[in-house]
Length: 88
Image (cartoon, rainbow, N blue to C red):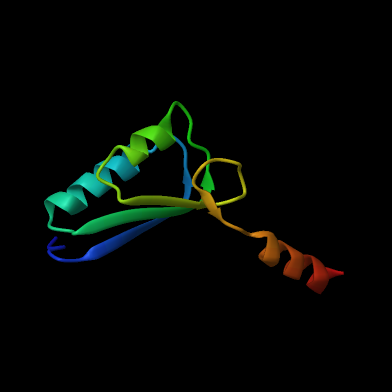
């Protein structure tokens, strides 16, 4: 795969240990990506996973605030509130 000069965003539903994401980020860098970021819905981040992710080939780690952690920068409050209003 040729990622030369590309900015890549990996999207996942849940990151637990981060091993697969770290390996994917390195593979993308090796394939020429200029930046690699990851976004997930649920950042579980067990066994120092967030620290390992931030020290890897990734430029940015973002996740929704469904679980409290330092990468939880995307709020889902509005989505949940809208659905509650719709179902009421």
